[in-house]
Image (cartoon, rainbow, N blue to C red; front, side):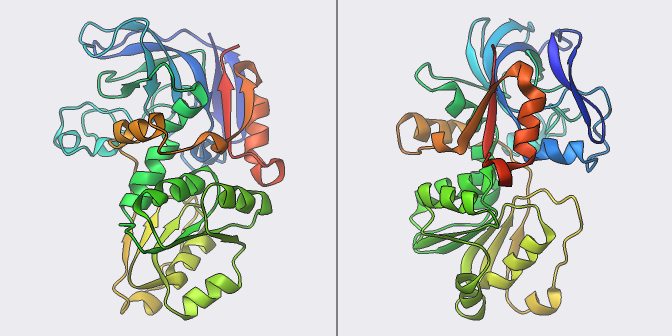
Amino acid sequence: MRALVYHGPGQISWDTVTDPVIEDPTDAIVRVDTTTLCGTDLHILSGDLPEVKPGTVLGHEAVGEVVEVGHEVHSMAVGDQVIVSSVSACGHCPLCRDSMFGQCHGGGGWILGNLVNGTQAEFVRVPFADYSTQRRPGALALEDAVLLAEVLPTAYEVGVRNGHVSPGDTVVVVGAGPIGLAAVITARIYSPRRIIAVDLSSARLEAAGRLGADSAEVPGRLIADLADGPGADVVIEAAGDPEGFVLCTRVVRSGGHIANIGMHGKPATLHLEALWRKNVTISTGQVDTSSTPWLLDLVTSGRLHISQLVTHSFGLSRMEDAYEVFAHGTDTGALKVVLHRE
């Protein structure tokens, strides 16, 4: 088969590799019909995750058709259409029993495109298939379905839920990339008083306005007024940028929450000299995707509208072009870039 292979920092190529096979009885093999790129893939390419070894097929989000199952897979069969979760869950360890699938101690967690070959390929081996996939409703478009593999549950679980967004809150989202925009969308579920999106890209700020932000601006007067005045109840850091994190600490109110989603490739300064008396809660997290069934229901019932997150579409064979477009998103206007089987 063909797949996008990581060869070391700054080096990827669309190569011919060995087809995946069932290695454990809980595995399934899925033909990839749609996959996508993630900011984490760019961190890998930058060398920020040395645990990813050269020769690894990247990617951890996909939608496709089951073509083979191990003899201990019971919830799916060959021919089923599934969403492949970015997180694999053994389903049996204490953390999985608490729905903390991202922290799985039974061999799961974030392993696809990290510790094992991932989804940016024609086929993928899905470990712990019973607990690591969701059935895709036939009426749900592939481009919408793939957003439920990671981007939507990450924004909701690590940003909105960890940040305790509540009715009447002022919510600031720092970083209006795909995750930040998904946080804007899912924060709306809880009827906040207003949502303010902050980014340096005018195209992304325009997208934030279309997707439900009440205000969208580069860091400026509105943020300064919040920092000097009442502050925000919840600040969601979705940029993975040290300066963005510092902005979060400035704008949050006393007793407020900072929910860090962004993956930081560099250290971020924690200004305890300014925060020690503010009773601020700071949360971090790896997505668990435990919310995916609920979010899937909201999307299929028309309660959440997510299609505008996808801005670019390519065939699988144009994977390297897709990386180029996605890596320069502030110039290309790319939000979520998807790739389809040709």
